[in-house]
Length: 231
Image 1 (cartoon, rainbow, N blue to C red):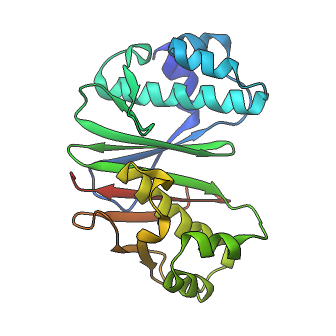
Image 2 (cartoon, rainbow, N blue to C red):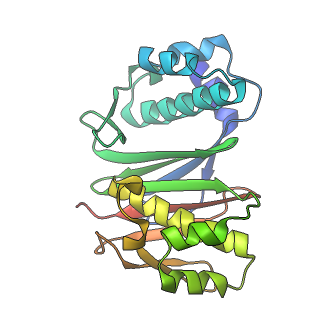
């Protein structure tokens, strides 16, 4: 096992998500301790410079572990050392690997990150949120949910906070797969979630071949992944 794999393997866990077999999702622990100095050469010069700007140790630790894990998984997929992965950013900020025949997406919240990879044509988006008590869910819901979604959220047969995050992560994952993020009004994406927690897209810029899954990667977190056909 390489030095890179030895460092990151204990922090990685493959997750079972209710999406087609072409989708692979991993969770990554970003918790302490911080990455040792031997982890940093895996990062690009740009990534190392970015890490140096993060003066809060927890943010720097999370960033380095996150990039380390992403490069490790991409290197395995491409058959090259993690440091050799040619990571680029599209004009919308979405990362990609030059010349790759697969898509991937990354998200993190607190000390947890998720990395999703889709084999073949199409796009994948993933989002995770720590379920943290907040008092503004009603105001936020009115800005990102349609009136119908707000009504469904308030009538959901689960704690209001969990129901809020479930709907929010599904919507965010779809927008990330689309490549727009919040550049598109979230209310243009309409979805419904059944009593078993299964999301279904009702309206959106890409409908055909769109699939979503909602899941809990670990206690205290809610996540979603969205799979879009080649558009």
